[in-house]
Each structure stands twice: as C-alpha cells, then as structure tokens.
Picture (cartoon, one colour):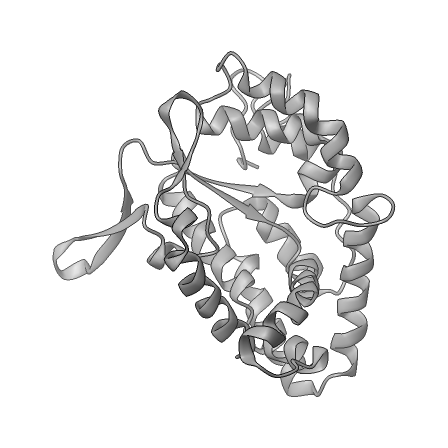
Length: 266
C-alpha cells in the first residue's frame, strides 16, 4: 500500500540524516528516540529466544517507550496532510482517494497500536500507551502522566518549563496546526473518514472492520472501548475522569480507591 512505501522511504531519509545519527538528548542524562516503528522494528525492543515457544519481546532495564495513540480514523485522515510531501518523494501526484483506500485496506497506524498494546500488557512498567485526545483535552494532566512514566516528573525544571509553554503550544495545536479548538479538528477528520468509508466498495469496508476488530480484544481498556465504538461507526466521547486515570493521577482512583491508581485496570 502507498502508506507502507511512504513510511519506509521516510525512515530511510531520517536514518541517513545527520541530525538522526544520535538520539535526541533529554533531561537528566536521558536520550530520546522518536519513530513511527512497530515493536518488531523499534531499536529499544529485542527478542529473546524461549526454546520451543519461539521468541518474546524484551526491553533493556532502563528503556521506556511512550506510545502515542488516537482514534485510527483521525490518524488516517491526518496523514492526508502529508500528500504534497509524498508526491515529491514518489515524483508523481498521490490521489487522496487512493491514499484513503490503501489506508483502509491496511492501516499501519492501527496495526502498530495493536502490537504496542500487546507489548504494554507484557511490560507495563516500560511501555505505556498515551492518547492524543488526552493531551488536547487535559494537557496538564496528560503531560504530568507522561513525565511520571518517563521518570522525569521530579526533575527540577522539566515540568515547570512544559507547563509554562503549554498555553502557547495548545493555541497553535499540539498535533496539528488548525484554526479553532484542536478537539473539533479531530472530530471533523473522524466524521470525514466515516463519510469516505461509506462511499467505498463493501470489500474495503469489511477489510476495515476486520482490522478494527483487533482492537476490541486487547487488554488495554481504552483501545478495546475505542475499537467497539469505531466498529459501530460511533463518535468517541471521552469521559474526563479517564484522562487522569490513564495518567495514574486520579485521587481517589475510581478503580483502586485503597491504593495507587493503576492505569487501565477496569
């Protein structure tokens, strides 16, 4: 599909760029590597042989992987903003209809979310799923949860710097430049996806449903709920308490009132 070739080419270009030779330096001596790779290709994930059972994914003791997710309908339509860039790479115009059709037949974003969610279940202290909608609706809570997972929540200047810059960042759009509230932009693209899907042949619609069904049985409660709503072509209306719960910052916790908040344990 077009997205597969596109992202492969982007990764090749990024890997050969001088600024990508080394990971991005982070606070407190940490390094940060940013990619769109699935677990089986990510440099932080190795596979340990377990005899006749095959191999199992594993991470180094100090590795933390924060995985940003979102409504797959929004993610697919958001990639359409890259069409001019894609056209330059391929040396020819990429038709929006062809791009959407290819994405619905095989969505790399959706496939990657499923793989990372399964690894999160195995390594919950090293892999954590974060959702774009959380950062748009409750940016302060979401960023505090991210900093806590990465172990930099007690760094003297990291969180204050982020919180100081948040109003300006949010006004421009955290994930996409847009006029007006970013959550409305997300909802607009989601609605547009459903309109485009309804126009496509039944075999493509069934292919999309098959992919979405992989979300429903995941151990991550957020993705499982999202999968059911996407399969039913419904809007994703996020309860505000779920944002704090996923950040492990709700007090008292709705599901663990006698102890620490545990992300995703519903």
